[in-house]
Image (cartoon, rainbow, N blue to C red; front, side):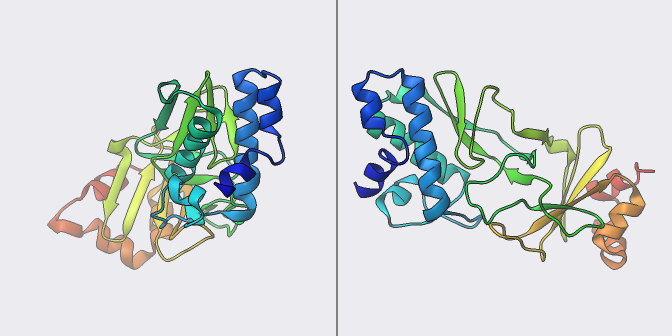
Length: 238
């Protein structure tokens, strides 16, 4: 498999490491670095991608989500390094999370999907729904965010609870567990890698109205012939 061969040779020569009987962690780190090196110039992060890791390694796809590139890395560990499958845990964080802006996507075109209410720069982190990565030998390998962690949730700035996730006709709004910050989905605002973008702001009714727009805000507050979950939450804000 040409792509797998490339991943195992550039820039870290993993075959040489194996010949030296290098520790498994060093082999894992080398393979991880190589996969990222290949991905940055050959693959793209695309929120609408359907292809999995097998297709990426076979050369039949060049775009993937978090689960696709995580699966590619798992196959590299298993098929390339010979790591037993039961030594690798597939990590899946359910629900919406906000990852810190210092954790950059493997795709250099993707700088983030979150802006501030009065800003235009989306490099304030990413809102993901169910990110995926791997755990092996006590380390967490996240190819989507180009980082290996010592702590399982290291990249996660906020994990949103289901009860603080509000769906409505215009889209979706998330609230941090302390209800001090809101994040609103902007379905008509696209950024590289994502079909839509998000905007964050202090949790006040005035800011929700500003972000959503006065017309849509009024409609949502009166939706469903009574207070929706969204409306009930907004009515608790100052």
